[in-house]
Image 1 (tube, one colour):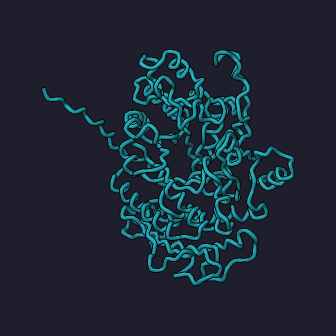
Image 2 (image 1 turned 90 degrees about the horizontal axis):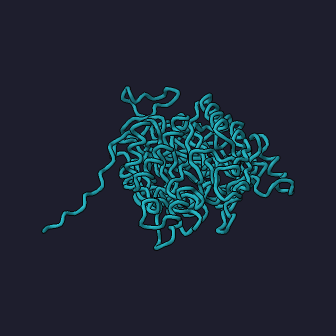
Image 3 (image 1 turned 180 degrees about the horizontal axis):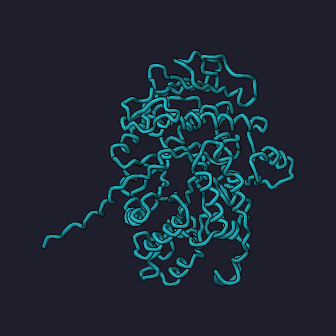
Length: 505
């Protein structure tokens, strides 16, 4: 008797990424740190969770409302949040996805944040930590009590007779995303918060279960919420293939993140050129899918050393900022980087605290808060800056370059190529060309793709050298890293400043 091979998983139904995401510029916040929540819950002392314990609600989430005008002034239009749901400590050890973490507040605080975002035209994206849950989560407790090979037990993953801990963390129990009950719960949770005002989801550790596990879940969510934007956290591999197989709209571009800080730190722009070649390949594959998917670009996030601390020469922040602001994809500014935040991630317990700091009540208090923390007057978890006197200038550079991106909307879907003939370790001319789809007429009406006109290409010039050099065209924007940090004055007109950038047409 001939055996029949198992059927391959069905491909997700074709979908189009929401149109609003193509103009997205994200400001990413880690709320538990930003709002000054305690590292660990102190109200989980009962034998079971959900009774008298766990009811110590502190309304910290509203602190974010005081920063929404800053988000807009920065040039962003999406608030991308890390975990806000009921958890034990850092937010990735979830206890209940249907409840706001009481260290942050409750649903009234969430509703107020949604209202504040709506008033300002800001989209709100939440962090979905569904791949793993706290060992104290009711699902994990029931599964562990039942054991492997049982209906309840097989809702989590096992390593022999022990629950499978995510990346070796015994307190983070991986769930089985193929389990129908688990799928129903994830769909219900995602839909619940979309209906309450969220506009999308970042799916944490999406790479762990793989795209096929997520495809049926996202297909159901998207059927009910076609305007929801889905961002998948993926570290390595074929990003476009993962997006196509899972149904995600965007994937985190970690390859480019690594190349940006590494090439700038080492003075090796050949590494960046190689990564940009890969980025262009990804863009073409995303484009060929016809679904509007795009990679997310970033120079730092809640899991990485701050970009200002990655670079040995702080002047090269100018180049990092320009790459973030102008390269194709969906850019995300990690809160604090726009002021030159400095912090190093350490591989130890509590090693993420420095990169997930407390923020003061408003942007105007950032420098004062840094100085107080530096003097020992504030918690060591406070925001620290590379150069406090330069915070305003670093912010202004972010605003200026993101404004250019908003004017040249086609940059989101542009093609990118490095002029290899001029490439050196310290000089790169990165040519950005409008894609054939014509997305993004300039906001000032300077070009009209609908009328058959395409915007003119731009060239981003990076100069990591110690001397200003002539720019290869009309300079639209120029940033001197030395002027940004030390207010020494701008470079001469028509040049690419030393340790700086020029945008030319």
